[in-house]
Length: 243
Ligand code: SAH
Image 1: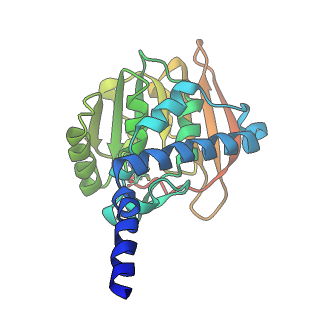
Image 2: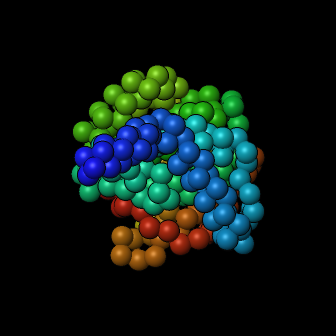
């Protein structure tokens, strides 16, 4: 009798187990994550100056498979709304923050966007669904190589992955309609302001590793004047390099 109960138990458990970690289950988790992000937008609407994100941004978030950008051992947490370790002391950003930074850039299909801090490549993959070209720079050669391999595997041909110090931007492909920096420095790198197109927008965390960082929106007007706005406190890994 006990054997029959065990066998029956296994048979009943099987579909749930087969589903866990399957594409279908990840798709469901992704849809739930989008709902959480929408909820958080409403809660933070006063600081971020919007109470919903562009539907294109949410569609991009719903399409990019975050579990492909996190180390295997963290895959079951890939759709939790929080940062996760990706090795080398670095992290993949929290999904809400990725969506927020993407939305604040107001990306349109013709844009060329620069990202400083490739990390896992997730933010670049989200942007690649929304714009013409993404150039992303990573200072840790191993992470840059892993991201480049991942982009190739996933057929993300719009992304150009560069190894180097992103503090200095990437003048070869400048100017950029938008720039996103995913590591925090204590000031806005002047070379990045330089490489931003008039009318362009840059979003970055500003603040030291032990002080409160502010998510900062930089807008460059048509005449080249620059305006900065602090939006909300955030926590990012430090912007390293020789500057
Ligand atoms: N956008 C990433 C988040 C990565 S965390 C993602 O979606 O996963 C920030 C990354 O910035 C780290 O990988 C870190 O190595 C990198 N970084 C730090 N300083 C940098 C610099 N000066 N130039 C380029 N990358 C830098």
